[in-house]
Image 1: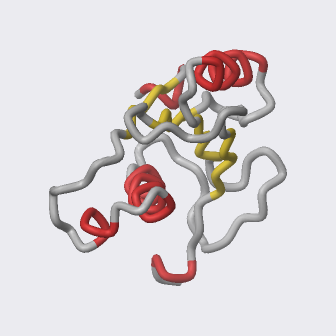
Image 2: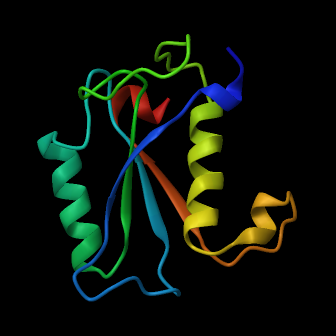
Length: 119
């Protein structure tokens, strides 16, 4: 399989008041065997939303009952899923320039990792 046949899973939590363009988007990388329902992840997501920030959890391949698409399993050494998630978020938030490999984008994405997700 090639990368076009693979996918990443993202759980997105928007703040109740809506997304504020001047606030960063948090991309959360959970620990080994974790996911968006882990208490430590939920706590961070709630805190981010309370500060009017959108929080996005990248679900590692095949974890949290997400279907595995492609032949590759989760490994902490694989960074292409994080890159794909960042590109997807720039597309979701309207930063088409980033998707076209230009460096003039407006959405700030802050990565936060726990345990294996922080490596």
